[in-house]
Image (cartoon, rainbow, N blue to C red; front, top):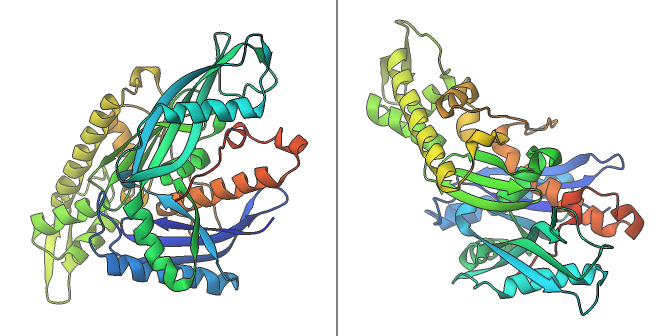
Length: 397
């Protein structure tokens, strides 16, 4: 199977990964490129030139390491540049019951798309079935081969802002690289981190990044809700810089050394910058950081309520991203603040094994396994994981 490359745009960095699937099912990364930049802030690009340079740098690093020319990339789309529309549809197969075939499923998805209106300035990225309803029975499995008179389904249609694609493609043009497909960053990450059996009922992924936090609800192989909170790791350091009257760089270093829920007593530490140094009590740092973390937890809880996540049913909740998990003790602190269990399960990788690369590895995993399912013979495809069976064609430009 030929290698694939992905380009992951974050709020503070750009990551390019080139890899392929091993015979035993694992993934091998042939080349990786990481370049820091002023990525995006919600749905805007603060510095397009910085982003442009970082895209070129990340791809060239991945090419140099893999010793392979990258001609096209699958582009991840952050939640703030996406729109999700759910559409249900019922389709009669004819006057008499007959066997459902793949064309019927495609037709059902097409009809559900026709029912909705494309958001202004957006294009369809992908359409994924949430579940099907046949003879009153709901299932995540494709209804192919079942004899019935009609089929129904709930379809998740994910859209991407055209401006986002154009901005990235303008940078890629300098390297002669094309965007082969777009994939929701949240969907790729969620399908990698959350086991299939835990997605049978809705599960939740909370990705705390550098400048924002994305929350998504996933059911089976489709997103059913998505939201963004304008708060991440940057705000922790920014609060420290303002409250302690130190530079952002000094505050960032103090944030990285901090340990949640640790009794610092009367200990102090010195925050140094190029021009000055300042002695600060550790409990003051703890007060500022934990106040911001509590504020973030409150916003997460509000969004989950707005998304109508039934927390009393104890849904599976995963935490990812480098904005919070890079801080020691943060997972336990957030569990206590939110009042429900949270899991962290970043697969081990020989390099870049850190929560802030979850999005990139999730996208690579998603694309490679989708490509593999397409290339395998029909009989082998039937044994593929259910979420790959439900993958529909990606739509681009």
